[in-house]
Length: 104
Image (tube, rainbow, N blue to C red):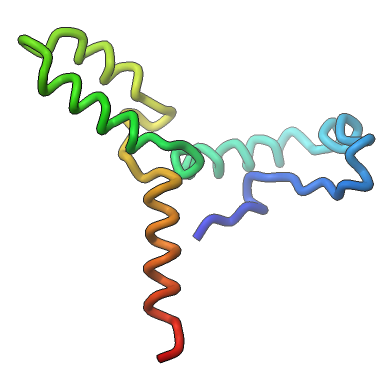
């Protein structure tokens, strides 16, 4: 489950004109907590599985793995290498959960 309140600020459309003021009013301790929470789920907002698949395709055809080391280094995040648990994976999990809980 993605707890958006742990790492996101919801600003009503009517208050968009005050967004800078709203963001500056967030205490530094809360910002640190939000950043820590986001570090745990950031990959869920990417399409890293597509990048991993492309890297694997290129590396499989590269003689002696030419350029693969650089590609692996580039596909790293705050916690190390990306896992492929991205937006597509999240969507599949949500759809699977709905399938299991739908009425007969």
